[in-house]
Length: 110
Ligand SMILES: [Zn+2]
Image (tube, rainbow, N blue to C red; front, side, top):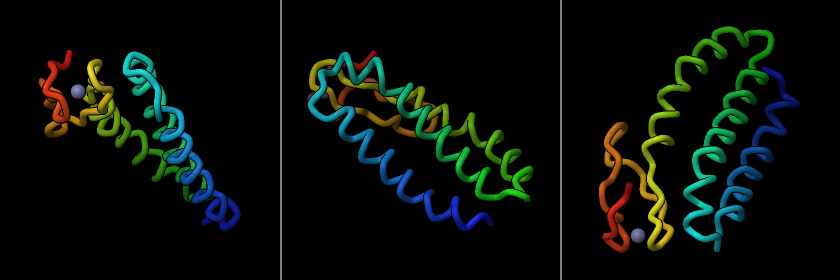
């Protein structure tokens, strides 16, 4: 376990959470829809990458585990819908079924 990386992991994680929130706050729904998947994929990549780096010199099992987990993280990101009517980010009902209607305003989601 690399203590230096462990110490900077939480500030980076915190910065991603706040940065993502600020990035989407007050933006129009088309902007959110366009950027939601890219920003989410970036966040997952950074977090998994930090975990693999922290595990040096035992990072190979974590790298394999991370690579195995990426599809599981990608599916919910890909299945998440952004409501164009109100801008709400609608998480999938389960891992693979995207919501058909916005839970906030009831508009249809594509
Ligand atoms: Zn809506």
